[in-house]
Image 1: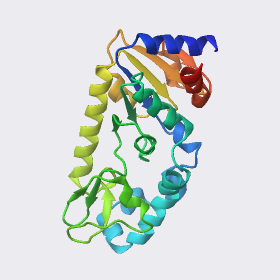
Image 2: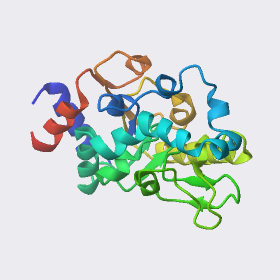
Image 3: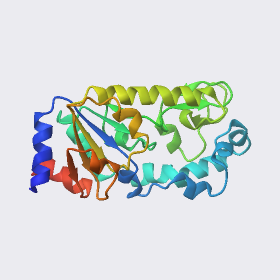
Image 4: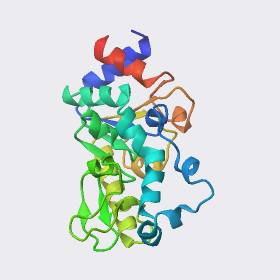
Length: 241
């Protein structure tokens, strides 16, 4: 095993509470698309408005299918998602903080997951505001509907015309920051640092920070250990080395 992998394994063995922070890098490699690639020049605020969803629910669903749902439900979790779930089951990782919306950590089997941008498992009805906490409603081949009134559902974090969007975003980030504040080891995986100042500001000074990313990022200058390698290779070595 490479020396830097051994050092990460040593950090994890010594840690009482390790938190993994994941970003788009572990999903885009497996078919996820950036939203801008899907909606093009269409204004996202317009796409995620109740008026648009009410008028064109199936078109909205097809946009979500193209950007997220096929990668989530057809291709499924990546090796990294599965490895992190296995490490959680072994007690080597306490929980996961992710910027990703795709629910792939949950599908892979991780249980303690904070999605600070929200995800497809927290949905709201555009008419009666009832909530549906189940990502599987997006895997039925059509736009999900509210069980109470029949109106379309939309991920709460996408609900741009509602104060709910802001409230949910704040709540999710607070949960992420609280989890980071309790960690003695934070492993950053596949992210360049989107909104990282909001959760890393709560990290204790004695907490070790490790980055796993093939590319150089803003974390290079602050991490205790930088591993510039494919995350699947790194965690395979941790699990099986």
